Amino acid sequence: MTCAKVIGTGHCVPERVVTNHDLARMMDTSDEWIVERTGIRERRWITPGTTLDDLAAGASRMALQDAGIEAGELDLIICATLNPDCFFPGNGVLLQHALGARTVGAMDLRNQCTGFVYGVATAAAHIKAGFARTVLVVGTEIHSTSMDLTDRGRDIAVLFGDGAGAAVLRATGDQGEGRSDVLASVLHSQGEFARELWCELPSGSQPGRITAEQIAEGRHYPLMNGRAVYTHAVRRFCEAIREVLEAGGVAKQDVKLVIPHQANLRITEAVTKRFDLAPEQVFSNIQRYGNTTAASIPIALSEASREGRLARGDLLVLVAFGSGFTWGANLIRW
Ligand code: UT7
Image 1 (cartoon, rainbow, N blue to C red):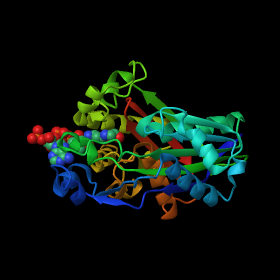
Image 2: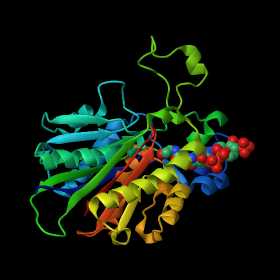
Image 3: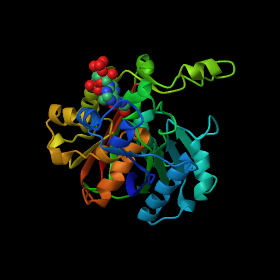
Image 4: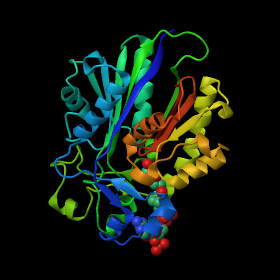
């Protein structure tokens, strides 16, 4: 049976560090409030001139180098983002060009914070079906340009940051118990909650897409019902972990590391407690990057791998919840 092995990871974050104290100079907020409610201490923001594609290409090159392969060996590119550089075409094709890849398929995934989990599931399915041998999965986001940096937008503005992460998956014919593979994936959506965390405008179904009046009203900024997102997130994170472990026939004590989407340290801690995981079984870097939506899991994966938190044969769970609502998980043998 063909297995889908993660052979390389990478990440790329802007150099500009924005602390909670920096934000407190822009809007009515404080370091205490942000740390207590979210665990975030700082995040990265781009400087003008950096594109989403630059971040994606930076993370991808690092992942390709880590894998020891050239961009020309890729058979498929999967790019997850909720902040594309332009309305169309999608960022996957820009990344294909930036990397100098062959004219292979470049797929865009619009599954917000769950985008990377959807991407790994899609990559593994392509590999196992024999459609592709080597697949690049990228999560890339620029939030800093989209946020309302006045008091009106403070609930969102303190949470999100910019960055990109990537992983290369390759087909192997490895045999035996401890073989590296994506063992199982579970994916979910519930569109009835689309408006609990969304960016309404510009809209493809509105003539002219957006008006000056709507911009003045701030309807082009992301909107979130933080309480609703929080409650659903904790529940769905736990369900997705349970479901993917069942699908893979694995017990939770055998999992070496859970990398949750970095939404809020309180959400991660609630899931850790409710699921009775040991603190060392769960990875967090939200303190330094904030919530980078589709990029958060691959950035964390790249850091965890470089910190020596994963050895070949270890069991790893990636789990996410976000706008849509969408949620899901991958069970990976590293
Ligand atoms: O990837 C998924 C993305 N989203 C999430 O994961 C978000 C999930 N939700 C959350 O993490 C939390 O709901 C928040 C961190 C966003 C908010 O925490 P909360 O404990 O639910 O606070 P709240 O929204 O109930 O607001 C409490 C107070 C309010 O003031 P009043 O009405 O009590 O006077 C807010 O106006 O905190 C105020 N507030 C702020 N104060 C200082 C809201 N944002 C801020 C802020 N700084 N940035």
